[in-house]
Image 1 (cartoon, rainbow, N blue to C red):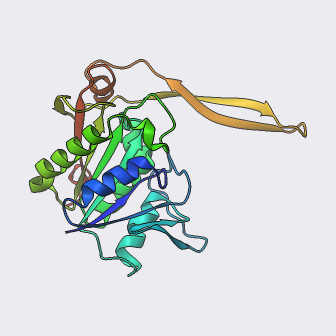
Image 2 (image 1 turned 180 degrees about the vertical axis):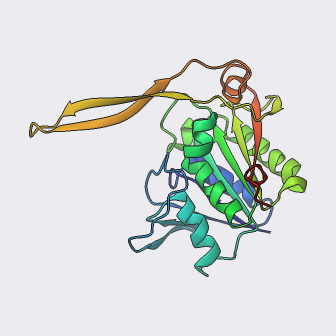
Length: 241
């Protein structure tokens, strides 16, 4: 099996963990954005050249989005066409409906299933933000082992018209698994802040604070119960076979 590993954060420890896991299952390589591309959903780069750079053995970057990475692996003839796409491991959970529609991590999975390639997204709830630093992944072995076990268990259900969205607590070693498609509508409350630059000109910064966690949702299961959630996103919901 040929496996593409990608993400929306670029080369970091979460990616390297998932790539090592992927190699347990077949011929694996990584193609990632060359910079942070969170919250770009399924955006594609259609109006400028795409450039490929090798970062390490089996690890490449392009100046594009996560969806670009999937299309590049499938159609550029630079790599073996993937039979499976793994996206992540994202630093921060991707729970809630807003993440399903807007996350770059999940955007790669949407693009994969549109191309009839099954996919799995992995995200982890972490309170620290230094995801590029290996030492910050305190439970890396537990994360890798649970991710491998989850891929193995989902293999019989992998189909080209659906993907799985997996969210884990920071230490998933003993976390119970919940299969749910009960999504919190919004994970964050949007905020637009006006600021003034050194030249006196106004600029704006879009951000957001956490919303109240809704009991029984995927967000609740991960953040409050420290459980692993598996959500199945199928194109059949839209009448696509």
